[in-house]
Length: 289
Image 1 (tube, rainbow, N blue to C red):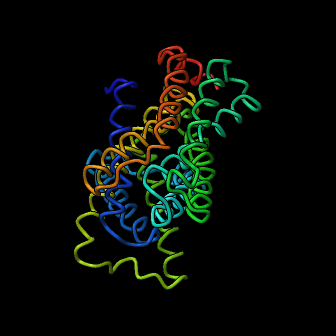
Image 2 (image 1 turned 135 degrees about the vertical axis):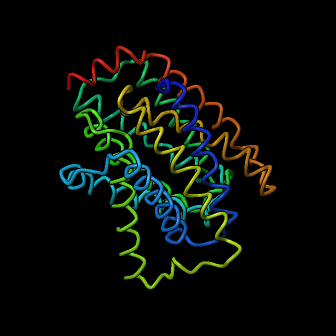
């Protein structure tokens, strides 16, 4: 079994490839989300069939809201990359640990002072990354922030299901499929021909489904069984580092100098949030909910 901390590292690499791959594909956000979710749902459903653990109908029904939220998160964020720099877009979208921490503090009363300090510092860094000097536009910032709100609700719902004993494979298969259907319905209603992108975009779109979705989101969902929501989502505060580095190498888009202080604050905040929790004790705590 993969160690919880290792799952977070794998997830960080996976999600860091999403922005550069979406840029390389050169398509709209709905089309990018359509392909990302199509590939992810097909792979997870096939894996479920191979191991004989096809999703139960009860799990499918309970997971539908999470699937819709995941679809909204991906479509909005991938579209924001067309209106903002990689550093700006990823910096805004990873602000959702602050919302998750506020929920846990007010409703579940599980947040510690160190955790609150960590997410506040992280959000301060995100605020710097969200300025025009970091490459943000009003439309791009609004889309990325809306994606962050959807991501918060997605992870909160996911943790409830995972704590109840739903396996990672079963949960991801159901959620990815529900999210794909939601995006497909929207694309059809909006007249977006997501199934017919330029040929040169298809390899990047397939990679967008395999790497960020299966290594990123799947490992985050796995870690939800061991860490509180704010801890798991705080690892995404490191995404601007990885995504900006890959964008620099692959797209010749270096992060603006104004983004560097923001990146430093996000790392500090993520470290404070993750350092205060031990996987074993947290797993026991979550198991009693």
